[in-house]
Image 1: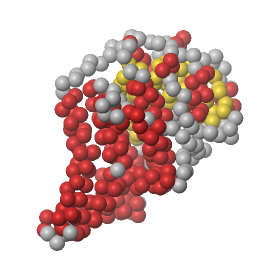
Image 2: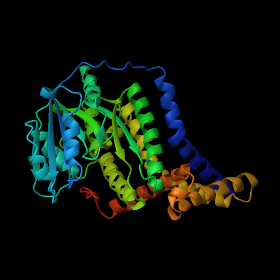
Image 3: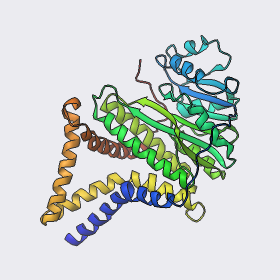
Image 4: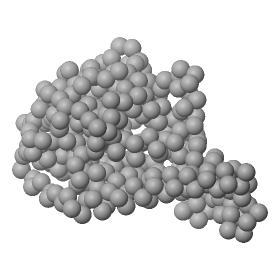
Length: 382
């Protein structure tokens, strides 16, 4: 029994180490031999900023104003708002905008963000489409930084940098989100330096319009669309200077629901693009998807196996110590949920976020097994 437990402990520990530390370290080593210079500002293709919106009356006006005021040639910029059957004043606010560069496309039936993007793309006229959210705040030069990368004909898509900020500091989800996205931005930078991303930041990414592939309504567009571009033989690169900022979710429940929706659609996306997992045909892409997505989504299984194996081996001093560390880690996660967060040491939000993300993976798997797909979304803002 102890030999089996030791084997399980070793495999689970190795997987955890590889996914969170080994894989980024391996990317960093490879990236040392693949340096790419930053593109100079200059290339300014026509761009269409596509905002898929569902009941965004509180944000859509500000977002349109911010976009039109950005540091990009006015004659090369347009804004298309794809309203996913909004029931508030979103549509009327867009219609009140007298700038001819702003257009509204209304989807009569609530069908989800991806369908709104599909319909919106058909209305876009720019050579490059930038996908944005109503709540996201862009750096004034973000469009210039995204656009300059298209001077390289091998580039089919560009992802910007996504930064969270937490004004209220009232939820452990906030601190954990910030730490997570800082970690993800480093991985994206390394992937891009080596060759190509296999996923983009949903609130700031762009594609050549001629390469856009319409997606099913339950697809995770910021994962599947970049993969479609890579499958066409183009690269998707990361532009760290193109900064987008957004406030973190305000409650634990809100963050969990969002993670479940994203992960469920991400799992469906991998199933849709499973051809790219063929190592002999797509060596780099399959390695990335396996290391960055598939194995990460298997982490909850490894965590359970690690805990059970360590419990069996806890009679030995070393494993007893490791088991205690696990209990403390999960204890901190629970404390972050039960105790008002402003009274806690902020890094304790990381154990909570780690546990909630992996719980969301388990819940997403169960949702898929029951046939539940999270194609639509509801805005919680008013």
